Length: 382
Length: 233
Image 1: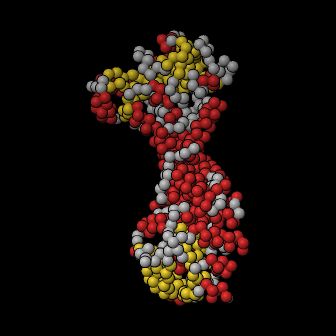
Image 2 (image 1 turned 180 degrees about the horizontal axis):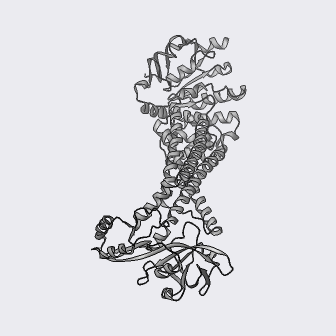
């Protein structure tokens, strides 16, 4: 097969690819490093994504909360008058309360299971999930709850419509099954009900509103709403800002970010060591050939292009293998472990790509130095 | 008539101070087209250093080298590389063939460096392999060939760009007596022409008979001697 590349690069390609042991070692080194880097960062991205699951699933444009809130799960209840105040702000289309808390369920077999309870505004049902079976209006029925069919669904004994359970001595009944965009981080199943039923069934503090969900009349109103809410001593964040705040908490206020970053760095160093060492050995083993090329008439920039081409070629192939391997493993893991949080994102791929480029650049730097220093006279001297 | 190679007063030393070694001392060298010149002498006499300087590989500390009238050491690095690529064919002592390429690809390297089309360069290389009697080995890697055959591949690589100057460094060093003689005889009979000059560095007296002129080097100095004089030794 004829490859459309300059002859000098084709020589380089054949020098490497026909040296199967070195080629395999280089590919394994880079693929393994890429696999580890993407796996680690994907895990982190998955954790961050799931930590904002409620924000993503409810989907409100603006969230009003106590300024001390750090994650969506750590709610600090707001007094009812804040809701009235927000509703009275100019630029607010509507504002509704949201309850978000946890409760212990007693299942049919007598076992207990912790669950996240989301209470939607009774009048508007803003933030309601996508129904898979049953009707959202059934949420107004007696003891009605909607079960979310996510990766934790089985922990509720995979309920169906009509399944009953006990919640704080109250009878609960599944009236519908729904889906949401993201599963929660902490491995607890989720039930949706109305705001007032949530307050009735779950013991509460004096203030009861977890968040106020706000829809502005126009995007231009967001800034003034935030300003007015801040003047009252509360915090209004857009959906993206709230997710960013949660991510920053997990990244900087917990050890998760540091640990995963450390693992990513270790993967990078492992990849750099294996690939750099192997590539440099390959250059050393072929140094007299590069010298012979120089003696015959190859110019320095041509030799440099050979090395850069080889490093880039190996880096890109290794990157492809690494990404493929990681995607395959995440797919397999998800098939077996529904809780598996890892998700490959474009920033992960970009970061790994940048690191692979650094590996290729470092490896070729030493190779280029060596090749530029070789004197054709050394070839004559033997 | 312009000489093929003309070096005047070339010097080369390595190191500085007390460690300084004067490898080539004020040497004049001249070779003409149609001539096969040997440079002989014991190890360390400076013959490889001189060969490197007259072929544009090693810059002399002083003196000038002209090939077909061009002062090669006044050329820039890239221009000199280009000059070597088109004008000079090298046969290295250890052949320096590429084990991961086929024999034909090895031979085609100078043409590929001249940016000739890959397929065209390979076709040319196969013709040159036919000249050295190795056409049926074109698709084998060099490691599958004997020492003599590898030497022929190296020669084919040196002639494929049709250079006017051919430089051989110890061409028989890795070969047995008969093979070495056959190779040099082949070079003399098939490659030497009135448009080509061949310079061979050797200390193999068994091949002296094929030289037109033999220069003896000792302690960095060159002494012009007749072949018969050395044959008699």
